[in-house]
Structure formats: structure tokens, C-alpha cells
Image (cartoon, rainbow, N blue to C red; front, side, top):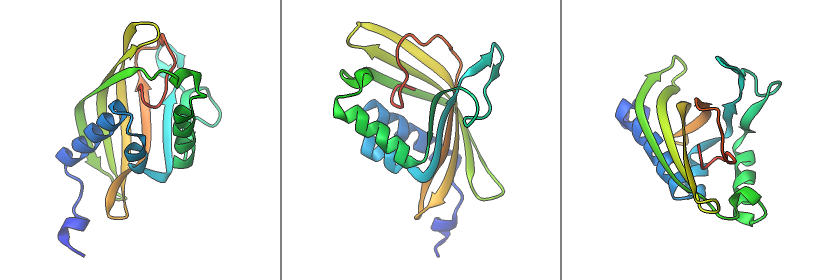
Length: 170
């Protein structure tokens, strides 16, 4: 095994992975985006329980978005592509900005990556634009020689949601 394949993920490479994910969502390149996730991934956006507390358990509390496993993300992408998803009949224009990326190698070899985000969304149907902002909490693991996303938690800070949320708009 080469030193390169066992080297920890650098902070710059962790940030580049998040930038790549954002660009794939901006381009609606769902196949490449899905390939970034592990089969058993968690993709979760908790809801706000009150003004200062978000929900903590996606299995028993309200979530704004919750998918367990890449297969469930693949199902969502299939519905987006099918034309039967009302929210996705006319795709919005989106632009993700990622900042303040910090990464930390965990004791099990995974990497925790935290970042701030802003996503600008233009809804073609209503001719309106808005922005979502908050924090991403990614967990990355080495799988098949590549770094993959095993968990993505999206902590949305603005709780006024003027249109439907979807995997590509946050």
C-alpha cells in the first residue's frame, strides 16, 4: 500500500470535496453527486424545535429533509428526473457558496468537515429569488480508495422557507 492511499485527507482536499459537491448540485449532475456518497449514508436537515433548538433524532422528530442510505437519495433523484415531481418540473437555478471550511481527522480515521453555506435559488416559475444559509456537517470516510460522504447534516439557519426545499437547493 502506498503512502498516498493511507494519507489522511488534507484540509485543502476536504474543502475541494465540498466545493465539488456544490458544483455538481449547481449543474444538476446528480450521477456524479450520488457517487460521492456511501451506500449507507445519512442525509439530514433537522427542523427547528423552537427558536434556539433543532431536532436531534430524525427517526422520532420532525425533519425538513431526511434520507437514510444512498438508495433513498437515488429514488429522490429518479423522481426529480421523472417529471412527476411538482417541485422539479421546472428546475430552479441554484448557486452554492461554501466557506469557513474546517476539517478534523477523527480517531476512527474518518474526517469531520464543517462549513458555512449560502445557496441562492431563482425560481423560474415565480420569478423570485431567495437565499438559504447555514452550516454543513459532513463526515467523510475512505471507501474503495476514495473519500466519500457518509453523513451530511444541513443546519439551516433561516427558517423562512419561501418555496420547497430539495436536495439540490440546500
